[in-house]
Length: 224
Image (cartoon, rainbow, N blue to C red; front, side):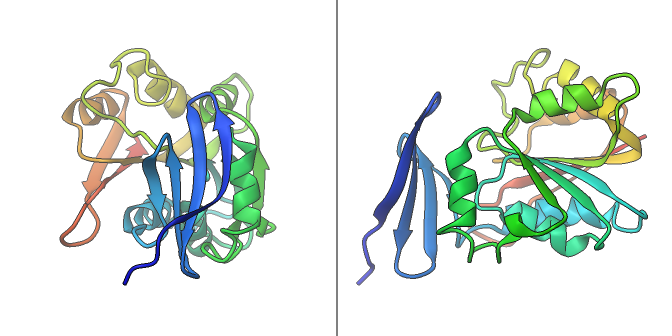
């Protein structure tokens, strides 16, 4: 008989109540307003996202990576596993409780990825971090990874969405070094977003990791 899920912590956010639930010893969920955002046992797309992006920059002397959204730190774990010891990884996360969870009850899920010496966590909107990096004279990133709980979809504002709209994509391109990588998690493929990426000067590969079951999309774009 399956064990019930237990809420072990929760916090009010501007988007609603964020909860961490646990079942047994190793199964975790993160939810917002009872909508499941992450499941520790179904993380193949998050792991593929971090690995695919960082494999492409791992040969650089000091690869510099930005990850937007911490979640259970599984994308971060995969990124770190693909990167050399010289890498610098900035994680932008707006909810401090998520950072606390990754340092506490969720630490085992990612093998304490957040405590890796290569990692700096900033409490900030990743769109703001990208905008600053896109500024004149700013230090660029070699890879930018967006792993938010809502990816690009049919209702995304094509022009002004802060992450996936055409203006945001131009800022992301400016924030990347030459040949830099922009990788995005999505619930499904989105043809309009893919066209915007190409129009913004990226080459594009889209994968749906795994076989069977729910298969999310991983968009991997390279600045031309």
